[in-house]
Image (tube, rainbow, N blue to C red):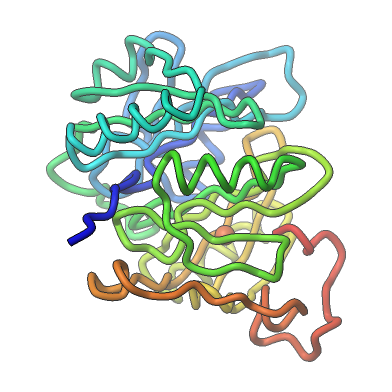
Length: 298
Ligand SMILES: [Fe+2]
């Protein structure tokens, strides 16, 4: 029997450089629902659920706009991590050590730069809390980053054949949804574009009621809602997107997200979804040409 080489498990965190950490902490607490878990040297941590953190903030007052500098993924075992490290080296990429802050929160780890120069960090034994935050507004989990890139083919190769993500769905030949071993429909998305950017970070909220309360809070606080409620075709999520560029990428707050069962995870054949606003982005759209300003890469 052919045993599939396993890949990363769960999207764990984004490390983001921001101009004003105190202002960003306030934003992530109030308008994303996260809980602060403290500071370590220059890093400030916020969490959702029980993992140690999902957002790491580092202050850089010279910035006007936040910059995502690293994406962290958990790995289920030493064996899987060793397999990933060997594939990275065999592919000609360089494995890099992680820094002391991450080493203190994990068992084993390594980092590698993807074809965009984005730093990926993979690790086992990520510290957890015994209980999730008590706030009703706190997301249950962080789901995925969506990246756009001018190195689509190179990234696709590295993410699938080297890192070990599996393909859940394609959208024609312009985007691909990739999943990790936690079996969420996607833990990483690549969209073909003319430059590289981490466009959004998605969070799974507890239910539709909480999502609508967060939407009202965004409107009350004048946090721009750049895409209002949509129903995604790939994951089935019902989401809205808010954006304040000084704090990080766009934030997707999603109610529901498809999770494959174990049999599907090993055997499902990726769909090749046709284009059009309804099919690729929002099943509730009135028409296939119903894209609205700024939506094509959300
Ligand atoms: Fe998303």
